[in-house]
Length: 368
Ligand code: G6P
Image (cartoon, rainbow, N blue to C red; front, side, top):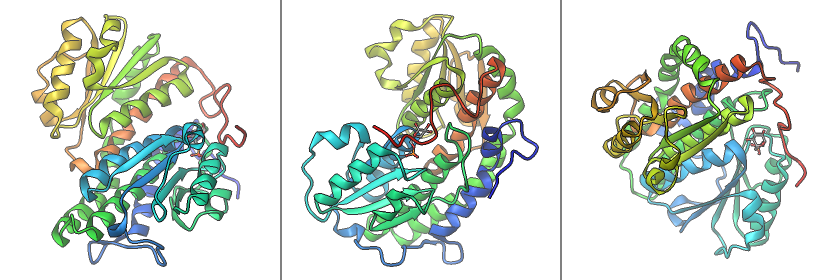
């Protein structure tokens, strides 16, 4: 079926705005909204309770979804996760114990390196699970079990809605795993499922920041380098934010773990380099806030993405603060994806680049 842009200027804008709907649709597939439990997919060929570890492999934005999932699986299910980009994993000759779970995340289901990694894991007798958006894809076909994202066709080369749908699937899986492993009680599960169901509503709230982000983007468009910082599950988001910006605006950007700032990138800080800090008021907020103060002390221009409590507790003068809705920690990665996508989008629009078809990039990389 033909997909059109509707009233949007670019597919990417349309896809960003579709997220509350497609995330709700995806979550409904994995959550029982009456019982407030996760729904274990039919015929799941393994039990999370019997797993020693999960190996996650993916490329690009899907890799960052996997990195967020590592935080969830380890915290909510006490299940160790090894994760690597597929182009490295496939040649590493990683030893794998038979009967483990190997999880592949791919929007297209056709990425060559991810597929090669899947075949390696199959030969090593792993259970093969795939989080894919295209159900008729090669990766889907070669997997033992598919965890579909229900994002609908994604046309913009820079992934947006597929990413938040991947996160929604992976968060649901982590809760399912936590329950099966006896780490989460029925009450914990109910509380987490409720939090997940609130994601679309919070995404709608986050989208209301668009006019402020558009004004800010006018400024960012003048920068030649931008640093993104985050800690905990905001760290992969920092890398995804930097990737999104690079892909479509061609501005050099780097995502860094906030605590690593002092081991290198702090040398770059001056008044010309914007520093975007992703910091919901969570357990690690105070730590990130002290990194932010180190940036401020060196004249860095800070753009802080946080909530009301974080804005009040930051203790620094920012160039701009984006005040997000106050959300449960587990769903923050989905909700905070919205401002980082909008920032990249509007910066690129100001620069006049081809947002939906950036130079040198392909939607799906089917060659090595
Ligand atoms: C390309 C796309 C990215 C995508 C990556 C992985 O680089 O431009 O947006 O994240 O491939 O694609 P996949 O289809 O495997 O998720």
